[in-house]
Image (tube, rainbow, N blue to C red):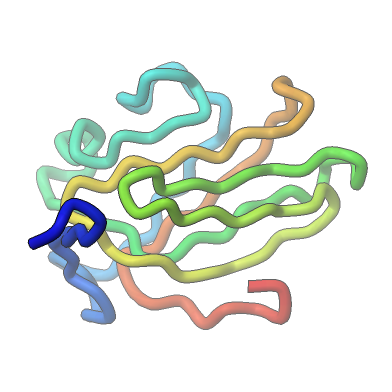
Length: 130
């Protein structure tokens, strides 16, 4: 395989990706979620806290409804260079690949905004903005 072609293990579009269907709700920033900063979630590290079951999200809702529209949240999955911009005042739902070693980050452009995230281990229907 050439250097510019990469593969990642996924469990995509299974209902659920693993175990029973669940949603995990995480307020960000959060210093107890296993990532290198309070806006990053290392899902492999977090798994031990989800009733002993492997929780692999493959969709999420980011509730930025309480954030000023001048602030943008940047959702990223660095392993696959997946990025989505969320404008303050919105609450989009969208899907992404269910990577087995998933690390996600949702960083506000102002560096201080707080918001709630909802993570699903099953495919969620995207809304009009997702």
